[in-house]
Amino acid sequence: MPDNAGEDSVSILPLLRGGNTPSPQREALVHHSNNGSFAIRQARWKLLLVPDSGGWSFPRPIKGEADGLPRFQL
Image (tube, rainbow, N blue to C red; front, top):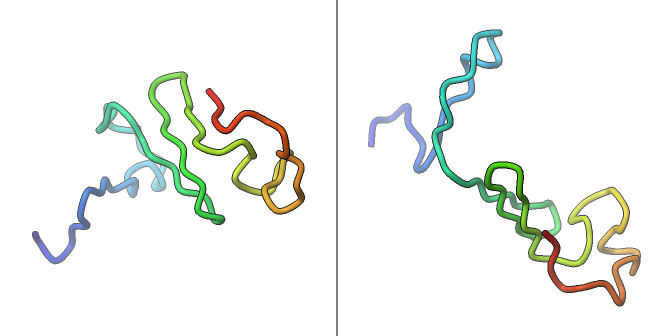
């Protein structure tokens, strides 16, 4: 790989500089939360592989707010 490239990465620098976004680079995107939760986003859908929000919004993972909720969300 070139020194200025990252494995499985896409530069968003043109967007940050105010340019247009390029056409979608991937069919799906994997999200990884700060607590280790995973989600997969594809088009208008998002599959959360946890019963909680995976972050700071309700239901928060460390507060027990997801107790009794389904293990997965779509």
